[in-house]
Length: 129
Image 1: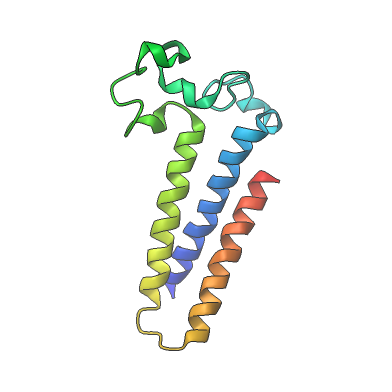
Image 2: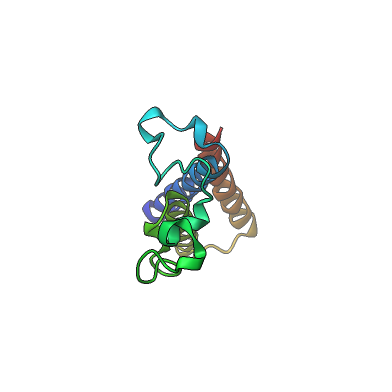
């Protein structure tokens, strides 16, 4: 049961991370004041995808070694939050599945799947608003 609860909590945190990523991307002006005017969180007129390049210009190449690939999570908050979202969703889902490995009742599987779905969306709505 502890593994199941941990899985649900990770899925909830995954939804929160996705909600914050979307809020950063689409509604950065609604971020708390301590995150305003911080390039990592609120890029203003600069498209976040350009932050992985020197002077935000793709023609100048990568800002630092591997900033376009495996180290992109260090270039801006959106990429970091997407990374967290993906990993927590995968780990949480695996933990939920592992906790149910001996369960044979299909109704329980459907109920658990629905509760994970609800947890994810609650997390998303709490942050994105």
